[in-house]
Each structure stands twice: as structure tokens, then as C-alpha cells.
Length: 276
Image (tube, rainbow, N blue to C red):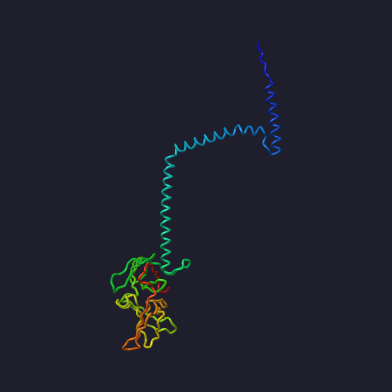
């Protein structure tokens, strides 16, 4: 009968080495350090671990591309389309900002202030030389009889309204007149109407129907008087540039008034109710 003999020397040697490494490791940890054996093991294991992680990542990416590549490509195209739309919206919003800024500048509004009335854009002019009228388009529904002005002065009033569009009769219209007065204490009252077409190009107003001996001077400011109820009192109309007296009756006075509103460059106006 054959008897197998085991060699215990290698086992004892390994056990001794393990015991020594354990003691060394415990001592190193007690000092807050890493033992020499652990550092050696890390140098051997970490490169292999890094290679396995990289290989796994590549495999996962390839699997994702194979399974979801079409969907990801569609999502990418959709994102690119949305970015293009947002860029177009940004450009449009900037153009609106510039247009709004230009409108406020023409109306004389302080960018930090709160303007009164409804802003409106002039979209058409009447071609009739006597009927000086414009068509405006506002951001809300217009009402007949509302007042139209710029920051500088009175323009006219809405005589026809349909939705957010309205037809405005201007101070320059031959059939239009405004009850007015000189802006001075006890200033005289009169009527402002359009000068004849041949009178300085038809861009001048005349103040007449003044009382005998009226005190009207060059440089006087003319405002609406509020008489008749068509226009509220105090709306700036223009400034007296010249005073003419009748050759027959020196007490009869007609004042030439230059309007404050620039009728040659009416792009934007504002519409206000007669009460405010």
C-alpha cells in the first residue's frame, strides 16, 4: 500500500508571510499610511482595472450606439432645429426692441417712464389735398372721438374707428377747427384752423376769431381751450410766428401758428381719451 506524504514547508512559509504582511498592514493603518504590500498590489492591479473599465465603457457606448443611434440622431436633429428657431426668435425680438425704442424716441417718451395713452402707428395718408387725414393702427381697439397727439403737440382726433384701426382728422384738414387760446394769464380765445394750401405749403395754422384788441405776440404758445367739448383744455397746438392785422380794420388780428407736431414725419402717435 502506497502512502502519500505531504510537504508542509510551503504552507508554513505562506502562512508566515501572510502573518508578517498582516502585522505590517495593521501597523501602517495605525499610522494612517499604506503598507508596502498594498502599494505593490495597487501598482499591479490598477493598470489591469483601468484597462477593464475602458474596455467596458467602449462596449457600452457601442451597444448604446447600435441600439439607440437612430433615436439619438433624431434627438440631435430636433435640438439643432430648436436652436435655429430660438436664434431666429432672438433676432426678431431684438428687431422689436429697436422698433419700440425708435417709436418711444419719436413720441418723446422717457424709456424709464410710464407713457399715457395707446401707441399707434401711421399706416396710410389721405391723398385729397383738402382732407388731411391719416389711418392709424393701434395695439388695442380704438374709439371714435379719442384724441391723437405726439409728445410735442396735438395732431387731431379719431373720426372713424373700426377695431384697432382708425381714421384721424388732422389739424391741417381744411374742414377742421379747434377752439384755442393764448397760454397766458387771461389769454385771449380764438379758433385755430388750417392755413390755405398756398400759405407756406399748407403746413401752417391760423388763429383767428380773436376779440378786438386781443393781445397776441410772436412766441406765444397756443393751446386748446376746451370750449365746445371736442378737445380737452391745455393740449399744446403750436407757437405764434407772425401776427397779421387787417388793412381795413386794425383791430382784426390773425396769428400764424407753427404747429408743434411734425406733420411731415408722423410715424407714431399716441391715442388718449378726452378725460385723460
